[in-house]
Amino acid sequence: MTSLRLAIGFLTVLPVAPAREARMGPARAWFPLVGLGLGGVLLGLDAAAREALPELVVGAILVAALLVLTRAIHTEGFLDCCDGLFGGYTREDQLRILRDSHVGAFAVIGGAALLLLKWSALAGIPDDARTGLLLVFPCLSRFGILATMAVFPYVRQQGLGTAFQEGRGWWQIAMGAATAAAAAVLFLGGGGTILFGVTVVVALGLGRWIAGMLGGMTGDTYGAVNEVGEVAVLVLGIALLSATPEIFGAPLW
Image (cartoon, rainbow, N blue to C red; front, side):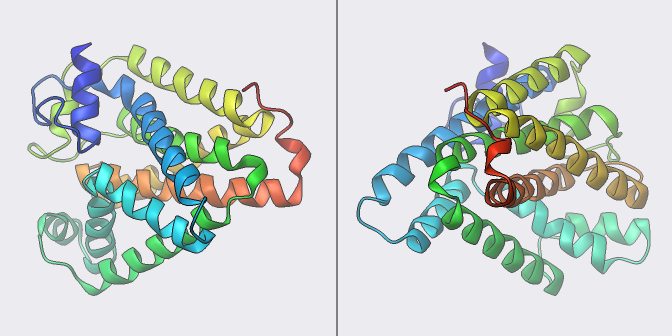
């Protein structure tokens, strides 16, 4: 279970294993399972906080908890992408800005929009699907990272994502897909299959756009894929439940 420990250590704040250990490629298979664990923590916090606090405050607590639990690693990547992709006019400029530790105007604007969307979505999940969506949205978004790792090349010779290029195999994609799809169907019924498909479309669509600009993916862009995937699953899940609640059917759990 070394690869599982590596995935937990990389994706969460838990000091389970060194985040930069070599041959982390096999750890990719566990990304969705780690996301499901994060969803379980959020579900527990939600159940406790809703006993005494308004929904808007609970939503803010969940956003803050997710940032702490993940060391904001994905959010930081999203912010860097906002500056790099929108602030650079050439590929070289974009890659240089992505490495810049300073925060620019595009990062501030993008980060504010991201957190506002995530906060309002987490606060507004209907009770009918609250358990399922809280459990599943971090799982599906992390499968989005896995999908882009499989399809698009890594553009840098050195970087946070280079460790995941060693020990890669298609079995990791299959295992991650099985975990994410099973969780979606188990906790969200038929609607979970739609959200799984949306996750793949959003991740690959965003990955194709990014790779077209940069020539491939970077560690920061993986973080952006995760953040956009989280919001997409939450918002679309709420929209589907409001418009056609029967599409979710009865979850298997």
